[in-house]
Length: 471
Image (cartoon, rainbow, N blue to C red):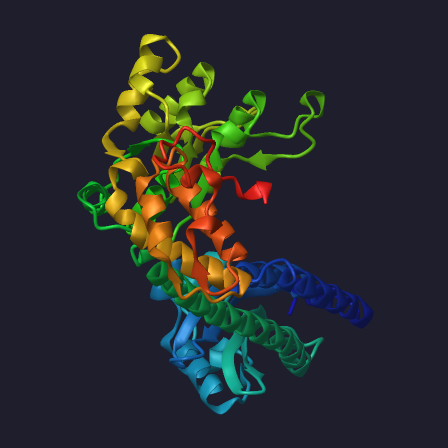
């Protein structure tokens, strides 16, 4: 297959080149699971090592049995369309159909085989060119073909070239089958992932904001209105009212539901770590960063980032967050590369941000960016008609968690809960119910199972809220 054959290329030299070629092909097939990325280099190495002047690899589609991929060497796509003889196409189709190699020893014997202008451009004639095409087949059948044009010479038989292409086709067949199996497994895993995502979304889309009071119904209406939009949301309300739950409801009912929902509680982070948490950092041994780390903004790309306690965000970090909201761009600490991020921000706070703005603790421009769609979550004392529903819900959940059956809540216990002011809001109610479930021995939650703060005659809420960790 080589011009050097006419100059006396020895058999041992050719064999060494063949061995090198097969090694190079094996290496190329190990570089990527995308078969199209491997095939072009293989044809190039065949040209370098054994003198192929033009070549192609055609792969069939596993499902449709139609040609799915063709990689060519020595032709542009236009050349392939204009100059490639119809005979070659018919020969290739016949090889794939029958599984039998096809050989055209001299193009002069097939006057329609090659375009004369192309030959003249290369300085060859039909007597110089031979064409070989062999099938690529695996355990299931013929999956493609590999073909090559080579300069004809008499020193090596064309059978040797057929044998070489047959070996190459075997390597390709094994590699293609492996990639088909990987692709099939990826398809099955993707379908399973999508099924689980649908189930998870169906689970979360069931309204978990319990209550039918006028105050909470207004919150539910606002969630429904804003979920389908791209607007940023600012959720306000006292600690424990369920601001994070509202953020979750907005996310799972939005077009970003299948994308990440990342939670960051800014109050739980040291001030000097907040910026790194949000924006990430590059590897910087001098600054103590041993490895690169993506920030929460990158992690939430195409999804939603929930920033709880936004009111404590340092002013310098506020300016950087403002840039993300305006330009959709971010930079890691210690880096200078601009990272594009598409993230929806849902922020929450129990602080009075207007007062923080007056005290120069919060940026007015950031406030306007975040406060596109404000949602106020009312405290539990303003929605006492929801207490009974919430208590029943928490009893059922705590019962499952601790494997206890609670049949009911006594009237006395309900009465005490209704008279209490709940300074800790829904979170305090949940903790108190879980404590009562643990204390109950007869399947009923009685008044004496509730904390002392709920057993005072007036229940003003002046007592410390129930803390489950104390029991």
